[in-house]
View 1 (cartoon, rainbow, N blue to C red):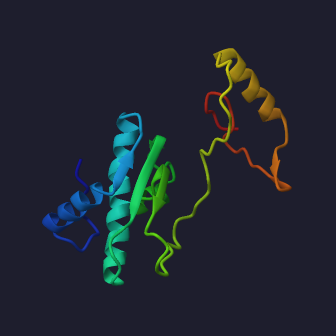
View 2: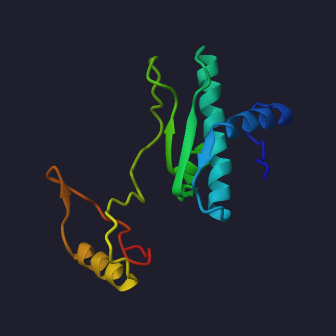
Length: 156
């Protein structure tokens, strides 16, 4: 998969070298499907961008992405164009220097918190999801928005 370099101020060779270097800082537990493949390419772009910023600021290039089993690509076109990974944890160092990426728009979408119990039958899982959909859930008195919380993934 190759990115089109329409608005980038890099020659193809330099871009490919940066993407190759970034790939060494990408770890994925994804499903190895098409969505994960697109997510990997987008995450490499994110890492390459972070490395470029770190390099310009005189820091060691340490940005890294770890993709969870649901690692995929952004459905938000704005985040996709900026290469922000979906279903992944990213870091840019060990906190030893003052560097925080301010343009991430973290929203925790797709975040699922739960527990695995002994009875993993599909019927029980679906019944639990339907019950959860009908209740109001809060964490520390803050209502949890469930904008796409539907069994089967359909939007409400």
